[in-house]
Image (cartoon, rainbow over all chains, first blue to last red):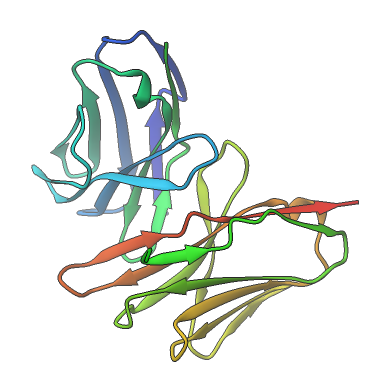
Length: 109
Length: 111
């Protein structure tokens, strides 16, 4: 069966610090991978998606970036965090329907 | 107009009640439809797929109306544990494979 991992589960970072969130998938090959952000009480905002190694599509221009160095690894990064980057970050994999990891709750202070 | 729209609620219902949510979509070429459930501070989880013929899973029934471009979710005999946010999801394949999540409908089931 397929599983998806995200870490860390929670993170508190100062404004201006860098960010690296990691997502890995097990039990499947060449999945479509997604990064979402969810602000408190709001819907899901698609940030990036990837259909293969090194292939990244950005949905919203911002100070975040994503990379897919391996088939089942998806990384979300930032060089300098903003207060507005706080939120719940979710990674998902898909064949057709999407399956989400447990998420990372990021607070930028 | 948003591509996928849901009534945000909240729906406050007593235990045992029947509650229904609708979700409208704008792309008539949409192909696949799902309902997800999201508990507070947790990730969304797939609840059920939605087929043209309708489908039922225990107390949950999902239906698709292509002519009017909406999907529905009916919950019978509501339980306290049904309290959550319900997200509808629409997948289309026009100009590329695209998955759109609704913003969700909040449900509170009270004793």
